[in-house]
Length: 209
Image 1: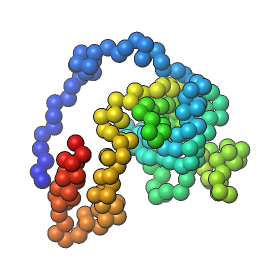
Image 2: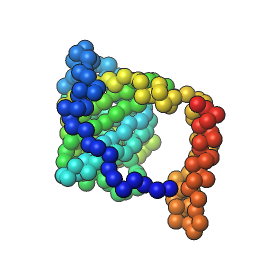
Image 3: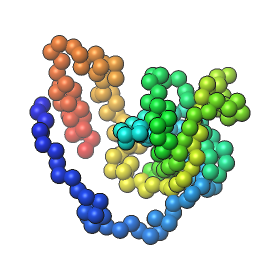
């Protein structure tokens, strides 16, 4: 597989706005500066979120976070906390937040088309009272991430509808997907054929779409 040596043209912010148009006033005004009652309920039922951070140079990172529904705890209407469960120990998010405290969260509830976006600033804590609220099966996290909320709003479900993310037929493709371990091993194996993987998935997608 070859890659183009030239970069596509960069579109200016003014051009972007001229192409996409102005946002609907009603939708724009749905943004809150606090965690309202419906957002609180959404967070209480969400078992999964994605978390975006960036370092001082603007290099971005997005990682998944998941646990029992409601693992993210609303401390008050402007603050929530996330447990730091065991993972790969790379701690990219913590490193980024030490340089740039901006954070973006996207909450998901399985089967629900809409998502909840929360933007703000974050920092790690080892406050015992906060960690105690996140204890599960006698296991308490050693750290939590406190998020000071700036923006909260519900995002429409078009992306999830288009992607058929919750469609059981789409989930059947998981049977065709090699595990991360298999892909990592094949990547460094002599004579690895990643195009065989592409062909396998393309055949499965043709059956679905």
